[in-house]
Image (cartoon, rainbow, N blue to C red; front, side):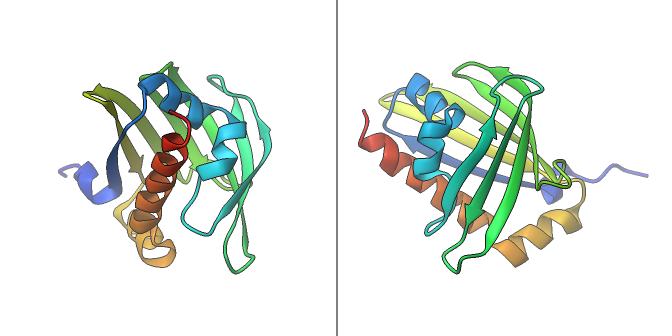
Amino acid sequence: MEPKSMSDREIIITRTVKAPRALVFEAWSDPVHLEHWYGPNGFVTKTISMDFRVGGQWKFTMTGPDGTVFPNTVVYKEITPVERMVHDHGDWEDFKIFEATITFTETDGGTLITLRNLFPTKEARDMVVERFGAIEGGKQTLARLDDYLSQRS
């Protein structure tokens, strides 16, 4: 049996921001920054705890515009400062809903962010796209990061 293509199990979103790579990485790894931009438009992120190291976790809530609270847990699997981080992402009961790989690549005048979310199945990927608008939400999240960084650099 041929293995399924990863492309039917993943979401890849990119954006180039006009900020130095070190600042972009810091904004992604410090809860003081994350609470200002993380999540789609209209969402508020609140950190419960964060231990930014391999094996550590970030436990947080995202509250939607309608008041729905979404519990989230990230468990860090790989951290290469200013270049890349890999983590499992899920809720408080199952932190392995998908694996996220975020890379930060220096470009002329900024940083290219590549966000790659890999799901265990095509069906799991399709569900978050259809039910939660994951692609548009990811684009909005990176746009919010860009806006936040433009105020800091």
